[in-house]
Length: 317
Image 1 (cartoon, helix red, strand yellow):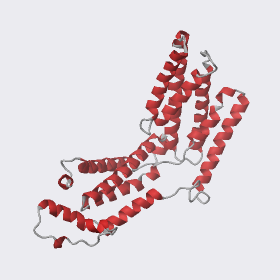
Image 2: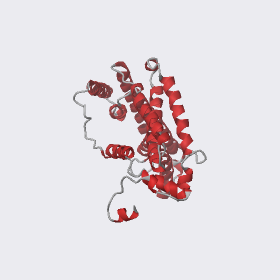
Image 3: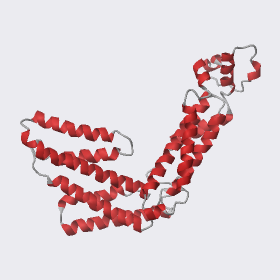
Image 4: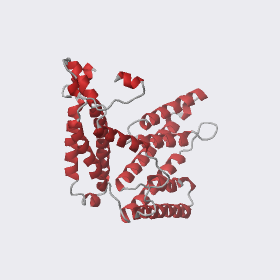
């Protein structure tokens, strides 16, 4: 087989029965070789590679045929126009973030939207508090630019630390940095203006409220309907993982299982964030959560070296 590879070829139909009088270690290797060109495994690899290489355009494939996209566009437009009308009526330039907020937090499902708007206002509150606190406590004592840069470094570190964290909190780090910098980086000297952080927080609150009200009132879309598909894929891959004849195939199935399991867990979290009247229409939510926990326990069985049936093969390899 090594010679075939050197010649640029591809070995096929390796028969295990052709190997005689070999050690246990060589027997394990022979099993690997016999499954090298397994058709089922090749089909799975091809499907994974094609999914990874799939190109995504600016529009969804059903952008002009699916009514859900039209409804989403109507809800988003209504939110923005309501925010813009209120902004012009109040003639309060500082709360212009209410319009921007409608664009940012408007997402296809209520769970996603609630998660995003919560992170946005949480980050703005923390960043605004840091900015106002630094103006009150630190700015009067700064004597040179080096001290000011040190203050900026502390705020940047906090925002960056949150931003590079889990996807569930990363967006809050961006908002912390924006609110902090907009509060303290004004003009060419120490600032005493604390209205920027206040206005930004008020604008985000207004945008969050309007978007939430519109999206929960008209055609609310739930994350609940998106749970079953990845959960089915999890159990399908667990079955393939259990029957995988080689460590290579097992690793591929394990990676795919972990990916689908992560998607399922995140979708369950988003569904749990939705309003009470929407959760009342989720009869199988607890069942899905239990099945996801069961799938996670089954997957852990293959992650533990002491319980992994392929550990001895990997060690010999």
